[in-house]
Length: 130
Image 1 (cartoon, rainbow, N blue to C red):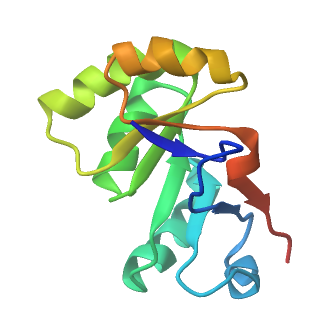
Image 2: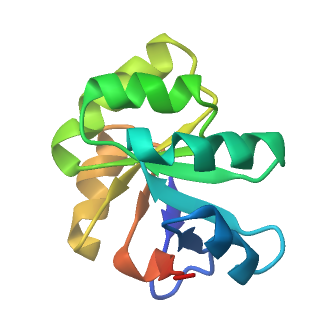
């Protein structure tokens, strides 16, 4: 199970951006994080064209399917979607890893038993403004 933002596991950070210009303020080879929104499709296309790894936050199964089709490296979702999303990802052989956004360390075991690819805690995100 992948863990991001856990206090005693060193991990890559997800740089949350709101516009393309903010990418320039991230370290080289950063992992970009943004929410799946129609208004962000231009940013997603820019990331793909420039070979920049990115994670998309999704709110439902339709957005999960879109995130995979858009070549997201990671798909971040709520606890309520985790089991269904992981099952879909395995059925359709997604390249993206499914990450559940957790608040409590005690939740790791529950999602490990469900076979979820990984978890991200709040400390795994870095907000970047332009």
